[in-house]
Length: 236
Figure 1: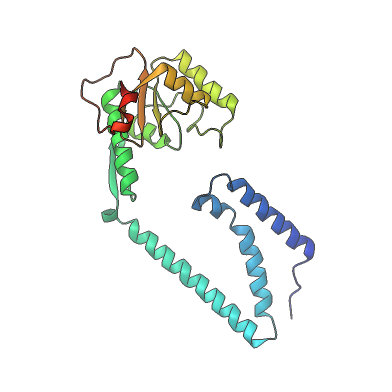
Figure 2: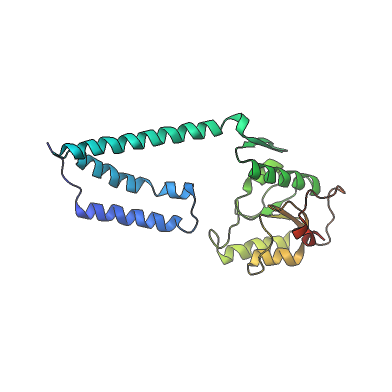
């Protein structure tokens, strides 16, 4: 018995939901964000394939089999590739006081390992550390707690001006807090401007920038790690 077609109102609801999800993840295009929006179009495609399969036309049924086969094969190849690159030999270590993490992106692992080492060498053990961007992992690896209520600070995409001001207020009350940025400060942002005016950069590797309050002394007299000439002025 042939199943009913998808009613127009259901189709419209699914399409509207998919467009809403795409709009929500559109501010930052990434594979993970796009995956959040995939279930809705997959429902639409599955219903479409179901109707083709139930069609009386042989060519339509064969096309349905081919599309499903290509989809299954693509998923298998993707899974095999991801499993291969997740192997131990393709990853690089990031070592910290909490243990060792292996990452399959060598450039990212090298940069993060440098930041972990700098935080542990140049700031007091267990001292608070605030960071911007998606770098909360460094708090864990170094055992330097994040004193703010946010596990990462990413303005204006994920946090409001009021939340940015809240973190700045915390820094004003706690001069022992160090700051780790994932880029040089932007003077048009409240948090970055406060850091630039009240902190000094004691280390950077081009991907991470470690700041301490002006007038505070480093934990160690060791020289900072690799510092590109373009950013050396910030560490004076």
